[in-house]
Image (cartoon, rainbow, N blue to C red; front, side, top):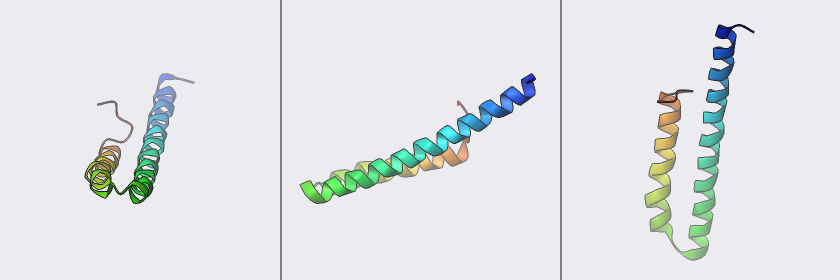
Length: 68
């Protein structure tokens, strides 16, 4: 494997990592909404969860596979 192939593989690994992390953030927000129904903490769950998940998704889409 030459240097170019290694970089392509690393870039794909980073992109896959971004997808996994965004999926986990969405899962955690759904989980927090479920807990909000149980503990009646809707305001906290929505004020923290929704901006976090939207920002994480936006960053993952805008900067795919980058390290900043």
